Length: 115
Image (tube, rainbow, N blue to C red; front, side, top):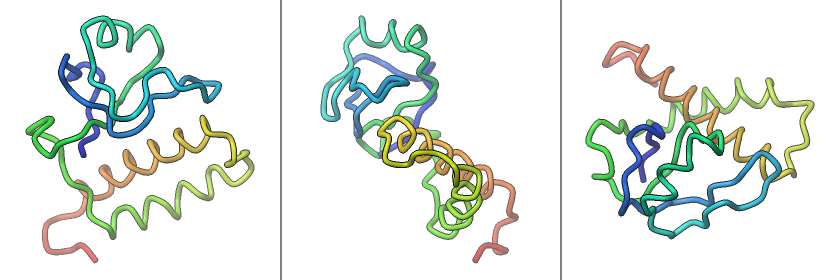
């Protein structure tokens, strides 16, 4: 799986997780192949990132290391401690923030200094 920016979305890519709106409604279910009309609608729906299937979905996608996910998870849990985590939209937001934060943590640590 790869997390990509909406600008990299292309017809034929397959969603790895449900794409949900702000209210937690599923816009496009996991496993669905993106078609041109979906790709064009993503920005209007407020989508900034997608999780798509395949390691080769985007060559520049960086695999996030477990230690970075752990560090990001702890930090993000504190930020979202007063939210309703049972709300599907909030949970999707938290997952996206954890992945993004983990990527930032991982890329800011010089090679060899991790873990």
